[in-house]
Image (cartoon, rainbow, N blue to C red; front, top):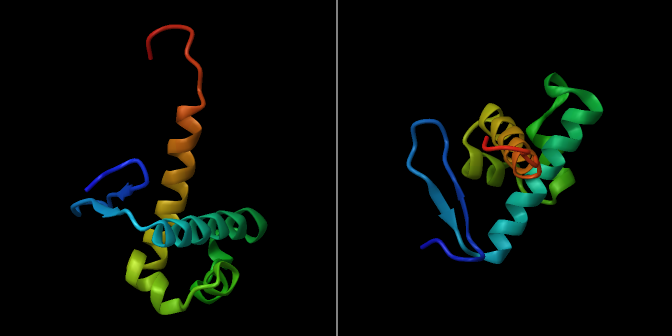
Length: 95
């Protein structure tokens, strides 16, 4: 059920999960944004699920339900940043 307002994610080896609820999409965006901020401010080793939950305004259990592990959450945050970065590259010739 992919549409204009849906977000699709794929974890390594898993089938894609599609979210179409604006509330869920916004929550996921906040979580990944705060994850990237903590990585930039303190480094990956200092990142904790408790801090991300507090900063994003969600329960720690929500983070585990959405991403299963701290490492998957970090990977999703980095992948989303990379995907956005790649879309902004302008090519002079065919990529």
